[in-house]
Structure formats: structure tokens, C-alpha cells
Image (tube, rainbow, N blue to C red; front, top):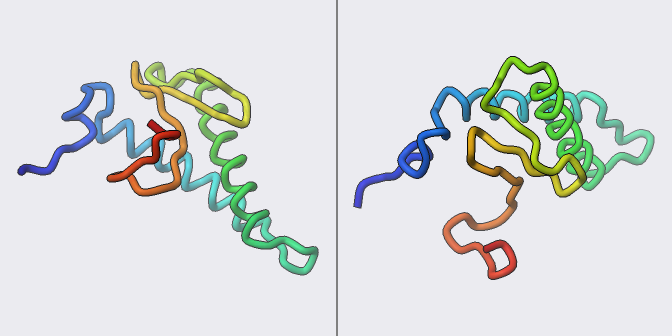
Length: 104
């Protein structure tokens, strides 16, 4: 069985677009790590929530700038959903090979 890549599933999921989204999320996580302060009680939960929020903010900000016409926001709430072209994207934490019934 040959390895499948995102662009094999949908042509909107190009390597260049996915790299751009990954950079936005990486920058958001970096922002969260920079602000992490254990001396005031920040723990791993706070870091995770802040990283999610900062990544979400970076994607929304990139969309608002209008420089990536292929990037759109479907749901800006905490259940954040954005799209790369026509493909909706959500954050998922779990086994990609065996998602639960809830995730499907």
C-alpha cells in the first residue's frame, strides 16, 4: 500500500498551504510558551489552552489580512473550524488511525 498525502485526498490541501497553516500554529504555540509563567501558577493545562487560543488567533488574523484567499473561517467560536480551500479543518487530539465514534 502506497503512502497517501493530504493532496491525494483533496487538491486544495497543497503542501505549500499546509506548511503556511503549520507556521501560523507554530507561531501561536511559540507565543503561548513565551508567556508561560509558572511563578504565577501557570501549568500544562494553562499552556495548552493558551496555545490553542493563540493558534486560533493567528489563523483568524491571517484570514482577516486577506493575503490567503484559500483560507476561510467557518466557526470562529471556541469550537474553531477553518477551511483550507473547500476542506474544513478542526483541531484533533487523538489517534488519527482510530478516531472514536464521536469524532467521526
